[in-house]
Amino acid sequence: MKWSMALRVAASSIGLSLVACGDCTEEIEAARVFLEENRSCQTNEDCVAVSTGCHTFANGLCAQAPLNRSAAATAQWQRLSQGLEECENKCATCTAALIPQCTSGVCGGAP
Image 1 (tube, rainbow, N blue to C red):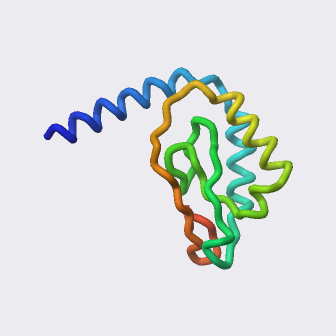
Image 2: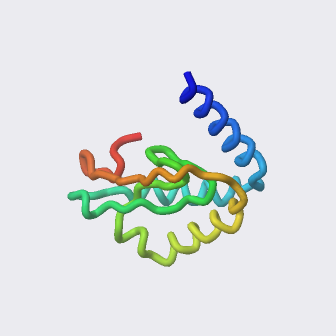
């Protein structure tokens, strides 16, 4: 019972914080497309977790998303990631760590 109440309070607090984030529709869409197109893998070592500002994408957790390691190192992802961080930088996120796995050739598995 106490845990249930604590989880509701925590979820409520996070929800209120997320409302305070700015309109980042363009940044989110550009990042979503990049993330969807760059999740191929052969082994778990091909996958990394990347920060996504305040937004949690499909197969993500706590403002982190699975991405192919090579794609995560590109200048394009660095620009997209920086855009998300600059646009959505005033919100609470949880502290869980995403550990992406390569499942059926996709980092994080199918959405």
